[in-house]
Image 1 (cartoon, one colour):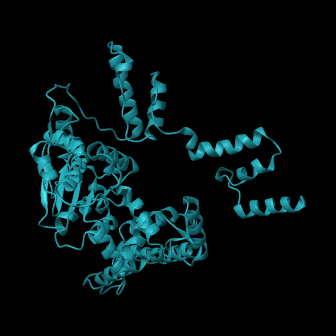
Image 2 (spheres, rainbow, N blue to C red; image 1 turned 30 degrees about the horizontal axis):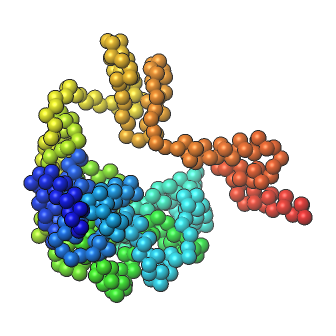
Image 3 (cartoon, one colour; image 1 turned 180 degrees about the vertical axis):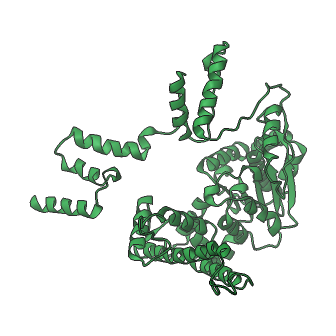
Length: 486
């Protein structure tokens, strides 16, 4: 690093506590940092990258940093540039998916399945599965009253298995093993009486699940075939295809292993099995690779990606000699908030890596807090409204009260209840309402109504799902209309 950037590094390094310095100083070998919220984990990761450049002759391009969101990428890049200057722009910083996309782009010959294909939309996925379920002879997954009842469940499970790097063939093998073990039980069937030879009632749900799973595998295989035939790929395929290529092509694997000599993964608690396998392959050149992961097993929020505590613990099991550093000094919250959150988390089953109580860097006192459990979102919103109403009656200014909710969709119920209680309120969000798909559909309709008779504006409206028009029928009508103009 240049003298100016070394000075910035030294200033920030001096502010670190002992545990943070250990995470930054131990640049070689595998390391896991268990970092609770507000403990400076992203700062540690960026300072560690700067220290690698300072202590070794590694080029910026040979350091790979991975995280889970684009905002995480931008935050890491900004902090890194502040520390090491322009060299920060040369460090490859990616989400797992953008990294895989980069590999596919740089080695197109290894990915004939994806190169030239189009990314499948949610609507395409549903249409493909709808056609497959309709055309495939099924029993368990196509109930008579509602043949498409399991469509969304099937699609969700396909995505889950892809995230866990499990193909249809592998899943079928698991099902057959499970079926064989189940059939091997001594008491699975009646040995006498009127039901001799039949499966006992307590085992019937397990056998039904096996039949469901076999039909699911059939749909999974047909779904993959349909994507390939239509030159489509889905979001999960990027990681799946890169894993396949790295396993099959040792030269490609070696080239990437030689390129990325230091690998760092932020928010590792959100990693799923496929992402862990990617880390393992990329760092597999050495028995104890320069692989650094930082995260908090209590904050695994990306459950939809397949993230579980099991995946977080995977790193320690895979590299038993890895250094483990726990950051406990919190620089964001007061001790009261940390104590309450710790008490709540301690009610959950204890994990194999137990995070100790966080310690606040603040000495500021806070008011007492309480936790109230409600059975439904409506009850919760009503309780909050009553609590706020009581505070306002006691003289607390309404502008001093704030309500935090987990996701934007929760705001609708809270707002409705607040209106019922006569509580004036404003909702703050960074979501662009005009980008919402339902608002877009409304715009299609309003534009067509505003310019009545304009067939170019009318055509998109006919495909809007709220009208439930058959797409093939709409296409035929539009074609007939087009022919009549000739």
